[in-house]
Length: 102
Image 1 (cartoon, rainbow, N blue to C red):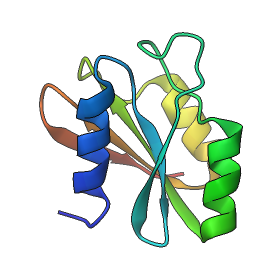
Image 2 (image 1 turned 90 degrees about the vertical axis):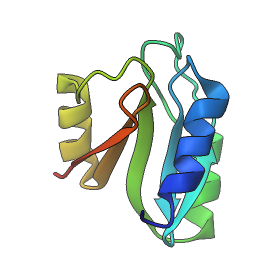
Image 3 (image 1 turned 180 degrees about the vertical axis):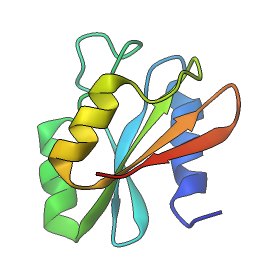
Image 4 (image 1 turned 90 degrees about the horizontal axis):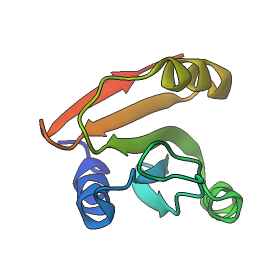
């Protein structure tokens, strides 16, 4: 298991049934607050957390959970392309990872 994944899984389980979100910074998971209006339906990384992550190192990926296990959404795919970062999605019920790339 990649270094960041165990921390990301723990975060996803801690905030379930909400979506967790975070960033991979210098190979480590950087947990972020979900600033989405309805965090059970989506995620938005809190801008203060994004800034803190950016200032602490190199961001190489976005990580979030899908509490109900659904596949990557159209919004996930578009946002991944726009961010030009790798996206990792943890499907909680299946205990599986999806990875999408721009």
